[in-house]
Length: 104
Image (cartoon, rainbow, N blue to C red; front, top):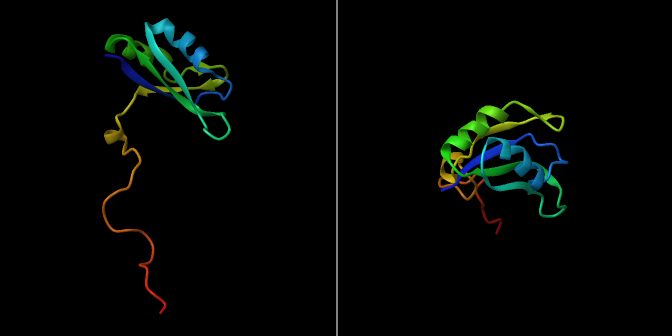
């Protein structure tokens, strides 16, 4: 099972291939993806790397978190599941704003 890392603060010039090259220094990289804007194709400044083992994932965090990558300091941490990060979707509870009322 791969161990996913969040990589934030990426320079917009970094590609998925470059991310893979860099993280290979910490172990076997199963996948590396820079997240891009669907409309423009431009990097959103973050990505995900999947390492083969938990030990390699921890090594990558230790080695790269807070370090410079192509001119920017990056943040590397174990990726949170959507449940942990509060990821998207409609939340339960009262709606925001004024209640709708009919003018008629």
